[in-house]
Each structure stands twice: as C-alpha cells, then as structure tokens.
Image (cartoon, rainbow, N blue to C red; front, side, top):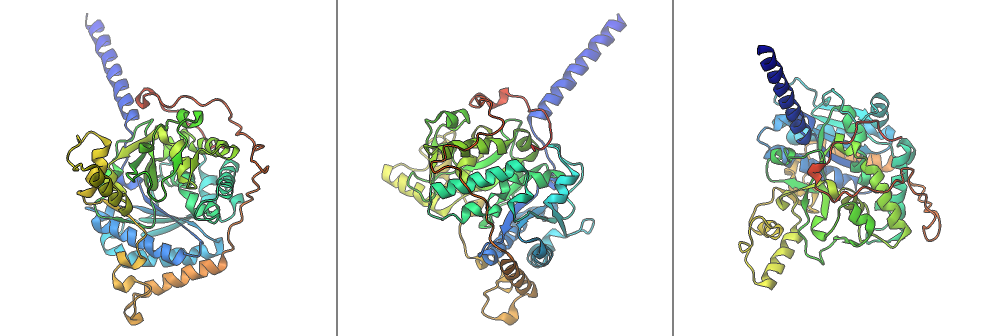
Length: 454
C-alpha cells in the first residue's frame, strides 16, 4: 500500500512541476538588470540635436524612476569606427553630468562600457540569452556604418527598406530609408542577447518620461505576445498614420485586421529571445518583398508599417499613455467634440475609452519633437547664451558629435531594387506558406531554440 501511495504522490508531484514549468514558459519573466532602455544614434547631420535629445530623455527616465540605481541603458552607435571611442567617452561624461548622481549610488558596476556588434556576434550565436550581466550602467554598442558588417539576411532587409522608400516616395525622402540607426531597433537583439539582456525598452530620442518605467518593463509578455506597444490613438487623417491594405492575404495571415492595431515604434518593449526565435527578420523580409512587388501593402511611412504588419500577431497592447503624441490627444478631443460624446461615456473595457482617457490622464511617456534643451538644465544646453555657465561636458559632447559628422560619409546601401517594376525580386529562401497567426495566441507553444539565422 505504501508503495502505491508513494508512486501516486510522486506522479502528482511530477505533474505539478510540469504545470509550473508550463506557467513559467507562458509568462516570460525578467529582472530589472536584464532589461536596458535602448537608444539609437547614427551619423546623420542632426546628430548634435539627437544626442542631446537622447540625453534629455535618459535624464527624464532617471528622474522619474523610483529606483534609478537599478536602471540600465544601452546606446547603439551607428557611426564610423574611428570616432566611436571619442563620442562614447563624451556621451558618457554628459550622462554622468545629467543623471549620474541618481544612477550611480553604489560602485559595484562601472558606469560606462563599450562593445562592438562584431565581437558580440563572434562570441555568441544563438537565440539563448547569455548568462552574463550587462557590463555597465550604460553600455555603448558600435554597429557598423557599412551594410557589409551585418549578417546576409539583415543586409537584404536593409536593402528592401531602402527600395521601399525609393519606390514609394514619402514626405521624408530617401535619407531615412538609408539610415541604419533608424532601423537598428529591429536587429538590436543581435547585440543585446550576447550582453545578457532578456528584454529591452526601445525609446526614440524625442521621448520624455513622466512616470516610472517599472510597470512598462513588467508588461505581461508571454510566448506568443512578446512585443508590447501602445495603441496609436490618432484620428484617421493624423500626420504619419499609414493606411494599410487590410484585405491583402499576407496582411491577414500576419494577424493585422484593422487600424486599431497600428502602433508607433518609438516606445517598444521586446522579449529578445522570443523575437529571435520567431525570426521577425524573415517576416519583415516577406512583407517588404510583397510591398515592393505591388500593389503596396501600405501608404505613407518607411519602417514602422512593415514592422506593424510583421509583429501584429505578437503585439501586446499597453495603455496609450505610455506613448502620447500631442497631435493624437488633440485629434481625440476634436473627434469627441464632433460626436458630442464625453470621455466617460464608453465602458473602460473598450479601446475608444482608453484613447479618450488620454485627454484626462497625464502622459507616462510624451513623444514629441521637442527642442533638445527643453528637457535639460540650462548648464547642459549647448545653446545656452552664457557659455561660461555651461557644463564642460556639454561642449565636449557637441564637439564629439561634430567630429562624427565630419568623419562620416553617408551610408550608401546598394538599393539596386532589381527591375523597374520590382517584379523580379527574389523571394526569401524560407518561402514556405505562412501559418495562420490570427488564432488565439495562448494556444501556441514556443518555437524551438536555435541559432541566429545565417
């Protein structure tokens, strides 16, 4: 009898352990030290403004944090290799001047460290996160300015992005399509996984935090919904709101069904392991090829629309207050006034109520093209009228950014865009039919762990 009871108890324990493992796999956990806030800077003519905007954004996050010493930051620097050391050193000094007192409360970890994508990819080539910890509070990662420094499939997607910008001319010209810094967030996992990061919060430089990022970092991502983003609550005719072709079979297969699923990639939380395992680079490839072969899958926009389509079935929506663009809130106010409907008339469970709440809920992250000095104390403003009152770190960072611009030759991607009508583009090697991703995301299981695509 006792043997039967023992076997039954052991079997029950094994079953419970298996259930616990399933729950753990379904809800992707993390530690704050494994989730850096990521910015991307490249050698564009506006680097001076972009660098000080990112400095102001980082400072706002540190000031709003309840525990700034636990924050980790990373910068992707797509600049000439010979200028990396000087610019990283200058940017580190400016960060210390702006937020060092709040972030560096203990000395067990260096404040700044520098790595390169090439070294990281040589040392780690799988979708599994390295067991290392981020080497510093602020880590600078050099991304090559030439497309040859990336894996072949990444180079192909970069060329497709450039071709899409070239064929469907949009209001910002082809320069945006050639900017690797603008596309770096989609390939950042190549560097962040070897560094030991499990999640990352991708932030545009023109964002300001008005609340602690802890709840955003803790977004309940799971094996199918591994990208967290705020809904874009802009009215239909808002500036920079792509118009998607929802009736296209590929768009439907990817899980994009209506405009309420459109997100702005200026604030994203991504589980890096799942992003790599699901191979969103391949999905971006499929979307871009179909877009170029025509008819177009969207109008207006360069890299955000294809990402919206490719990640649609994997996106977990957070409250719109995590990415508030002033024009969106004004558009919501006009729409409500036209319909003579108050913000509290809709149930809180509905999407329209979330968007309406932007009118009376303070933004947690404000996303606007603000002047760089508006988020920094006067001593850190490069245009402060009294140069004698400027912090020395300000001048050093400005001069380093100008040196980068002078040393840089603008990136020239191949952008051959085969065929006048783009009808002879090669299909991706993994041309198997797409699975239907519109099913209930909780029904799926994690993809097998494997290496980075070649």
